[in-house]
Amino acid sequence: DQVLHIMLETLQQVQHLQLLCSTLMLDLWKPLLPEDIRAGEDLHIRVPAPLVQEVKDSLDKLMISYRVLIPDVQKLVDQSMPRERSSRRQVSGGYVYTEYHKMEEIYQWMTQIQQNNSELVTQRFLGKTFENRTMYYLQISQPSNKPKKIIWMDCGIHARERISPAFCQWFVKEILQNYKTDPNISRFLQNLDLYVLPVLNIDGYIYSWEEDRLWRKSRSPYENGTCYGTDLNRNFNSSWGSVGVSFDCNSEVFCGLGPESEPETRAVAQFIKSKKSDILCYLTIHSYGQLILTPYGSTNKPPSNNEELMQVAKEAAAALEGKYGTSYRVGSTASILYSNSGSSRDWAHTIGIPLSYTFELRDTGTHGFVLPADQIQPTCEETM
Amino acid sequence: ELPPSQFPASRASAVALGYLCYLRGGPGRGLQLRELRRARRQDIDDVGHKYYLELELEDVLDKARTVSCTAEVLYHLGSKTSAPDVQVTVQGELRSTEEADQEFYNWIRSLEKELVAENIPDSHGNVPPELEPIHLLAWVASGYLIWQNSTENTKFHLAQVKHVKQVKRSDEDLQFDYVVLLHEMVSQEVLPWQVTLLWHPQRGARVSQ
Image 1 (tube, chains in turn orange, green):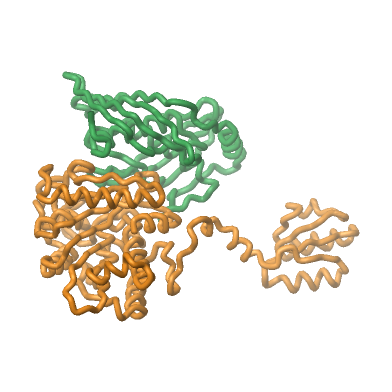
Image 2: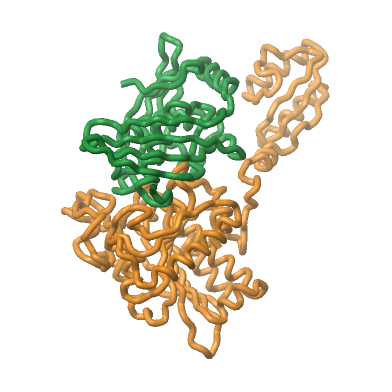
């Protein structure tokens, strides 16, 4: 589309233009109405791309002088989009990390990541969801002859917490982009393997894109298909069903029919159990609240290594705050937030993983679950 | 004395904030909590639990500044039917929104067709700039709901404006009929609520029953 600046000198030219505007239904920018077109006054009209040549030809035939004011309207619109502001579009290998992605795109991303970083990354099968979708985690492991301890991180256990999978993707990108140049990351990978599950509750995540943005649970049907979904973070085998749950399928904190009743829970639990002697740290990423939560949710009794857990968490919160001033509160779920049982974080700790944390990312309620994409970058940067 | 990071104080501060948003919020002003500085609780026999809070707030449209305030939140015993009593004192001045309020008022009054909108913010968290004042008025309406419906076992936030419809009136108030989705943190439920908000640039906002 182009915007033309037209100089009209005679009444006849004015009439021709008025006719042209109404026949071709052109978009008058100045003046606003055809009846206000005057000789001796400037005229600005936006001409749709397919009509540009025809309009210019007509003006030439009528000996009306004009010049092109805006040669490409779309380009100007794109440039002025607020999105380009302070958060620069983070594109790496063609993938935009500062946007939220559908599950299909995340599956493709995992394949690409493995392909582009095959010396470090392996895409591994974890299990299947209720709706039979494959759960993959990414194993980031630098080849070495010494055995390495593992850090596990999962995102997206609750479908509506979209910033969480965005963070897992960002995290993987940051590690892979910087492991050769950043001494901290390189030292990390010399001694540790990273296992990242970008979306745990795949069925729920897809449902939140297609049907209900504020969906939380999985998509397994109950009560003859009249009610759907288990809160996967109430379904683990840690004081299952004791507190902060509901046995009613309609509730957002429905804990399922028994511990590990859901295939997604079983897939994660089986794997972590099989590797538990090597897992140093279990991280599960949620939103919102700006919290680093330690065990437990089901009781106020502190875990055996509470001092160490709190110290590490406080240092993490301080480092996070150092980036953009975002403040995070630190403490056990039972004291900071509410009572709950069956959480993955509690379960990981009870089977012996010493450092076990839940992160609740930005914000504190202003946007809540619907965090705008322009906050992806600062959230992820500070959380790194 | 209560640790500010723990949930009893943070739930009370959400109530205080809701009340303040209702009283002082508007199409040009949205108040949010920057930090809870101090909290105390007093258990009053046969009456209920009273929280004394020192809060630091910021205006979403003016985040460089903060405003301090103190609040008292009294949850009544057996509070099934009555809302908590809240008192808030703001230290210092809130940024004036007179001009923006008048502009918004004039714009709405000039609309030929009654304004209708849904899903604010949208699924991606975006709010079209011209609907931001409508969004902020939803905060005012939600503030009222949060104040009226909170107990020591709940913590509400506005999750999304599902629907809003302007209703033209013969008097000078603007009327907006909202359906808002409130997220309750303890049960994790997202609850729809219908609420009618009346607003006038000089007289402020009130929820119509």
